[in-house]
Length: 184
Image (cartoon, rainbow, N blue to C red; front, side, top):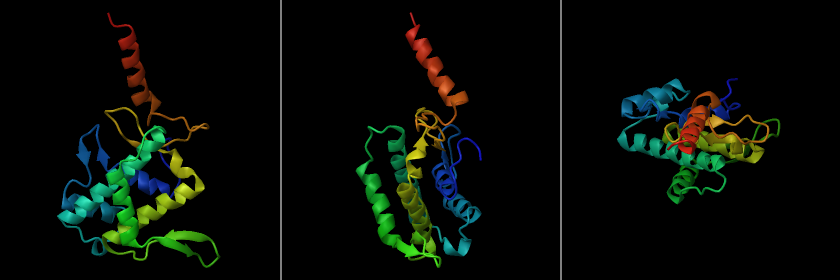
């Protein structure tokens, strides 16, 4: 497991959030074709993910709502955008995520459907819900470097991670702070 990676299945959510890369200015969900390809390549068969422009926009809105939620983990005094919460609540409602049980009695969160956009968003919503219950969601953070915003899993013992990579974003931040202190 790489330093930024989350334990499975939360890693799937981290990868989903990182479909937008602000450093490279790329978005794997930028077009209908790209969104369809990304979903197919990440375990959602093409026939189950009929993507048109309104569906693509809904997926992007959902991704940004998850980013907003993870950003609160990076800055505990922050607040989740209310519009982001509505997007997440709508996804729960539409997918019918509910408490279910495995044949061995273990509880699980499961969407009512595993098809279409409801199945896609339901799967990610269920993963986040379970991670919230086991405490691992609090470790999903967004890099505080304004030019990065990469989702990462905080593996630090005291959960104090700030940057996705100290060697890049952390060093840039420290150099900027040093230069600001010594300017003039």
